Image (tube, rainbow, N blue to C red; front, side, top):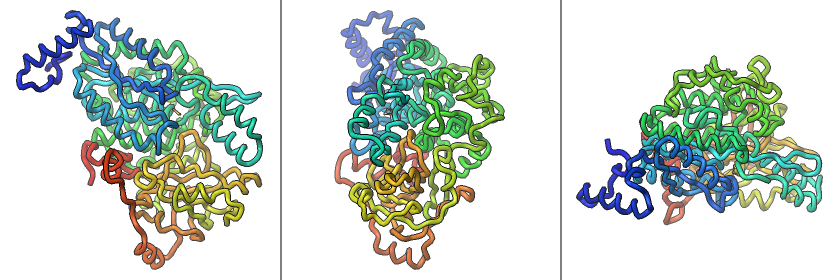
Amino acid sequence: MDHGLARGLTNYGDRDFALYLRRSFARSMGYSSASLAKPIVGIADSGSGFNNCHRQLPELIESVKRGVLAAGGLPITFPTISLGEVFLDPTSMMYRNLMSMDVEEMVRAQPMDAVVLVGGCDKTVPAQLMGAASAGVPAIQLVAGPMMTGRWQNERLGACTDCRRFWARYRAGGISKDEIDGVESRLATTSGTCAVMGTASTMACVAETLGMTLPGTAAIPAVHADRLRAGEATGEAAVRLAESRITPDRVLTAEAIENALRVLLAIGGSTNAIIHLTAIAGRVGVPISLERLNTISDETPVLVDLKPSGDFYMEDFFNAGGLGAVLAELRPQLHLGCLTVTGETLGDRLDATPRYVDHAVIRPRSEPILPVGGLVALFGSLAPGGAILKRSAADARLFETEASALVFDSLEDLAARVDDPALPVTPESILVLKHAGPKGAPGMPEAGYLPIPQKLGRAGVKDMVRISDARMSGTAFGTIVLHVTPEAAVGGPLALARTGDRIRLSVKDRRLDLLVDEAVLAKRRATSTTARGPSRGYRRLYMDHVLQADHGCDFDFLRKEPVG
Ligand code: FES
């Protein structure tokens, strides 16, 4: 098999000429013949001035290069799309698949024997893993690492659970404009990804559990010197990976994906990770069913006391023993034979037991925070394809609720009416948002965390049942039912819900039902319309091919086994 510069030659109809020309142009960059003969390790750089979470990537990538060189390889960086969560319109989720295509095509098209995927912010790690899984080139992930916490007055702050907590206080009149301005400058004070067990940290833990990173690297803070040592070690490992030719499909097996699902539940991880893991699994032909999620959730305790479900932050998790300590606790429930990018199995890794665990942050299985997993899937007449509730970050008093719906037809309708003093809402109402799913908004924005209507917030209401086809930030808290499938914009039952309808949520029975007669629904169905997409460009591609949440919102043509 060809390696190094001879991989995937440019097609001039003359292979020898193509290699001669490539070597000649590579020499123009100052490489010696000796360097060009080494295994080439590509480094996918997702740094961008529009991505605060990746601010330290230049320094991190230098550490990777050191490792590659020390191990006898030639490191070559290349840029990819970067997805800075808060800098993208309408939502980063819209571009995750685009980034995955960029990664896949550039990894495959350019001559590299292995690739180091350097990312961190919410959608970047799943996009890189999806792309690498499809590209079929040996790949290892290196995450940016979480931010450190900051302080405002006497309160410890971490993006972004505390962003929402303070914003809710400001909306409810609990703090002033000057005070919220003060908080704003203290929420995110270092480079790195959000400081709680949000989507970025969850995906870092998922990547490590899958065996796609070096062990012990998910939780190292972005600014910690260990992060640079992890970069160097990842570079060295990438050279060995190039030689061993372990491709992602050998690591991303059904058993590894089930391990990741279990860890996601045990860490109280982000709801978004279900979508991303489903998409990654789809790239290697492994289905994830929400029924199986419920089975695993019922037998997996929540062990990690991190915000938004608990009290601590990612730097505490790192100091408490990190993901290795969680894996060690879950060991009897894990598939230990799974291969990792180091060539060792998960079992080999766990034989090196962590030396120290702070059980205040990472509980033993005998004393879990919750006896069951953090996420639960719901099914019923309102969500025939399923919906997700993060029960570890919700108010259990609302788990068995039957009440009248207050329906917002769109994000615009929500913004226009939610704070109207005349809004017909009570603390018992169930808030419903439609047309915020994969095609509806479009892009399935993190709008599922519907704000408590201002008049209720000011009266002290902290949580209500909220239901939508949207996603929610992994850093948010509340009794919030998400990812209702099929979404309203493709004619799902959610499209038929009206203000005043009765809805029943039963977490005990895993049900979400719209209590309206079928004859009434049939009349409403006859007058409903479905979403029409834009006529050109990426948004047209997106609207024509994006799948529902139960298929990870991937494009139908990118999965290993295409859908539709
Ligand atoms: Fe990048 Fe939260 S904004 S991880």
